[in-house]
Length: 199
Image (cartoon, rainbow, N blue to C red; front, side, top):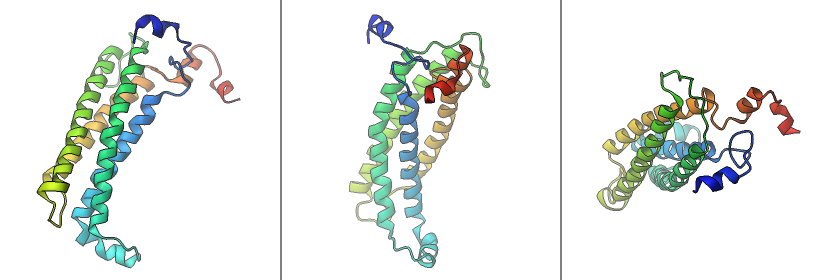
């Protein structure tokens, strides 16, 4: 987007042309869908251990249901992550961080934004790769097997969850420590009452 057009937009207290940042909300959708996908696939793999619990609770479920949830959630996560990354890059272009502050990890604002941006693209590639891998398992490699996923897939999924944690911490530093697109923080720094927005 042209810098001149961006400069002409009415910018709110959070530094964006809208009241609520889009990227953090989409991030939570990406995270939730991915975590649910891997968790349900793990539950499907270890179904025989959990079966007595479901029977005791009178919950009728079969292994294929867990794998269905895992499949549809990983696909949804891959799709929504394109929008998450796009919104992140749009909002990062409008960021005006304070240059003299260091994060808890010892990074400046620009370094944090750079690592967060690069990490977002890498996570997008990982999640799409996981969705493709999961599709091959569902429709080709494990099509006629009881287990629809390979243990290596689950292990990689857990590693990606840890990377998401690190990446999310960088995002939290951007909002919490540098005040990037943080409406309440920016209003307080300008001497205004954030509660007036709620009235």
